[in-house]
Amino acid sequence: MTEMVYGSTPVAIREPVLPRWWRTIDRWAMSSVFILFGIGLLLGLAASVPLANRNGLDPFFYVQRQAVFGALGLMAMLGISMAPPALVRRLGILGFVAAFLLVAALPVMGEDHGKGAVRWLSIGGFSLQPSEFLKPGFVIVTAWLMAASQDLNGPPGKLISFAILVAVVGFLAMQPDFGQSALIVFVWGVIYFVAGAPMVLVGSVAGLVAVVGFVAYGASEHFARRIDGFLSPDVDPRTQLGYAANAIQEGGFFGVGVGEGQVKWQLPDAHTDFIIAVAAEEYGLMLVLVILALFGVVVVRSLIRLMGECDPFTRLAGSGLACIFGVQAMINMGVAVRLLPAKGMTLPFVSYGGSSIIAAGITVGMLLALTRARPRDRMAEIFGKHRR
Image (cartoon, rainbow, N blue to C red):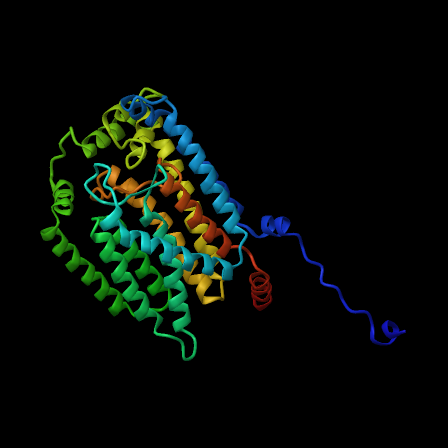
């Protein structure tokens, strides 16, 4: 009788999690990541064999480890991509705190692994590079603070984020790791710019970075050596940059053939920092262009989807994650072709490295979660069509 008078109570029908995730996720970006990982395994079959031979290991030891680390990274990506923005924010903040504490512990507990920079912690027989996990967490914390500063009576988020930036860069410079420091400063500037920073202030920050770089050049022999090598008009053919440049030239458009490249036998970091040189030599410019296009798909599609985002945190965090992912790839490939000084930075999902690939999975997982289509995006599209 009550239902006849007042009507029945509507029952909300919830769409299952997996179908909703599949319908709202950016499948083009996600597919590009899987293809990049597949290319990384393919290149690892060639690039890591010489290192395994030098260390007396099974020829495909490093490829097998890459497959395991890659599976963990991709699972992290898929799991985090299902999270709502609020959960991404919580995970990012907790992750940043944990990674920052580990980075702060490096001067006391860290190891250099013969690289001249104390960047790794040995935990349970595995080497961990905390700075890789610091980057996505820093983006989330910075976006959260800057978004909160836009609220009425909100905290001074820009100032607090700048203080955090100084602390992070200070600890990274102590390693020294100027490449990651520059990347952190860049992504902070991107988020600040998207948040509406005046151009005068952005220019001032850029000038400050230049001054710090000049001071670092005089204070750090490690940093000065890399800058001098980059600025030198002649490239020593016996250096890593020399071998990489020669390999890229030898590859041409279509490469010298699968397994026929020589740079993997000459470079100690052919499977990590200079993996693109192996790709260029054996597969030619065509594969390099494919890799560039795949990174471009992830970054450009993410930024396009974020353009219609109304939530400040989602827009800022997504922009920062997309840019830090794309710029890291640009730095890695730019070093190989001598457009940038040597940085010791991996190519996400392609280079060998447990910390690198798992952190990249976390980064892209957060990006996919923040760029998922939401009901308000669809309503904005409908209203936009009506206005036209």
